[in-house]
Every structure is written in C-alpha cells, then in structure tokens.
Length: 181
Image (cartoon, rainbow, N blue to C red; front, side, top):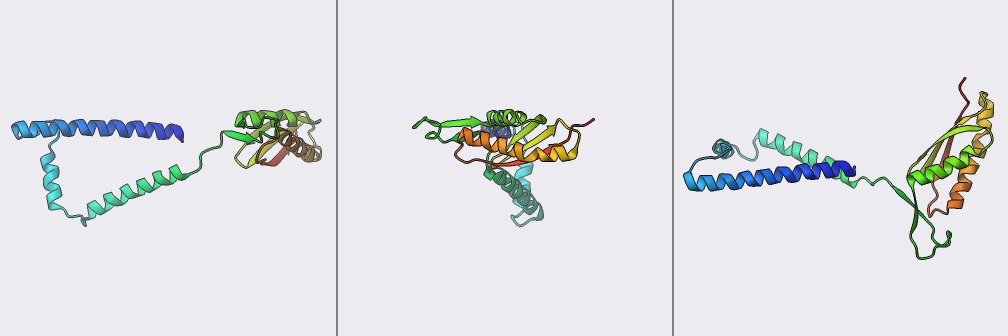
C-alpha cells in the first residue's frame, strides 16, 4: 500500500502543479489581451452559469467523487502489514534496547525448527500479524503418517516462538501433506 500511496501522491502533486501553472498563464493572458491562452474556459464558465447545484450532472459527479474519497479513506485506515515483531527486551537480556524480528527472519527460524522434526521433508511458513501458517510435506507417502506429524511440528514451532521471546506470540496453524509420488 505504501508504494501505491507514493505513486498517487506524486501524480496528484504533478497534476496540481500543472493546473496551477495553467491557471497562472490563463490569468496573465486574459488580463493582457482579453483572450484565452490554452484552455477555452469561457464555455465552462457559461455552462456553470446555466446549471445549478441541484442539477443531475452535478449530483452524479459529486456522488462519484464522494465515493472515491471514501474508498481512499477506508484504504488508508486499514492497518499496515506488520514488518517487525517486537521481542521482549528483558527476556532477551537487552534491557532498554528495542529488539524485533523481521517477518522473513521469523519465518526462517520457524522453518528451520519444523524441518528439524523427523519425517518432515520440507516446509513453507507464512507469518501474519496474529498467525503463523505452516504447510509441511512429510517424507512418507502415507496420510496417517503425515497426520501424526502435525502435533510434533506444532510443538517445534511453539518452542521456537517461545525461545525467540516475542512480546505477543502468534498462534500456530499446521497443515501436513504426504509426499507426492
């Protein structure tokens, strides 16, 4: 979302600069020679004199602009994606120092703990704000053997999260699939 905000801000500022320069040019040319320079604004001026604020076209345009503004407002009020997970500095032996783990670092730590479990061939870890999703592939082709790995995998992930001493430990969700043939 941050990239979109920057692009929209740049486009909006460029548009405002262009309109401001155009307005300055139009005012100077109108005062000097009583004619338009770039934009024939006389037709827009006469159209605005003929139409009232309760005209249908004005209401539809205003409604569309209000909806666009509300969508942008709601998009900005959405919470940003957590990029760092705060660690408890007292538990880590670093009183007075702000410590945190990145999303990628946390996923790598959990992945290494999960792949250390016997019977796990590989694992993919997704770290969200409140949840850690683990998708593991068992070495066995049997579904029952794959299901039996769910508890050891979850326990290994929880132990690693406890060892990292996060301020708020996310919940762990495990999905284990048997090895494909």
